[in-house]
Length: 264
Image (cartoon, rainbow, N blue to C red):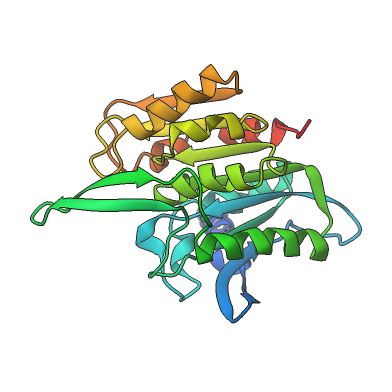
């Protein structure tokens, strides 16, 4: 009897422990407002947050499917990664997930649909010009966070998937002296901008069967970064489609690599 009771209590403990690690409400809801424009975002502070200590900052840019203004959907992919107890204890950091408006985009990219039945799109990345309203808000939010919190200046990171992967490339280009490391997943950019990205260390991911954002976009960026002597890793999943972020998040060395990077 006691043996079964102990087993039941143990399983209950595991259940609640697991539930806690999946508690997305730990990401506080906040809204950043500038010049009448609003950027919803969620922020996860370290366990036992101490305002006198400095912490790394991780910015995560979601994909197109999580756009909106509910301040909820942007946590669909990637947020649980940072809620794991082992990760929070080993890598205490401030993690921020902004949400892009459904009428805007993270990057200055043009999309052309050539087949109304399949919805196939081609992307054309603009190498210059003004940032979108949403990316401008993200850039201002980054400045704001560094005023409100004690951020470890040498450990500011950006990650993103799909549209957010595109935004990752562009954000680093627009803030070349800020990020120690960047992780774009199934994204892309104009290879002509690679020379502006060399101060940041890169780990790029893409799926070989991606029919939404073709793998060539990442491959060309990696080639261009290598030509510029940038520090870049490329993980290519031959059998993965657009959701290559699932495999990327499962990489056992991903966060270890990320938090090891320091801005020179």
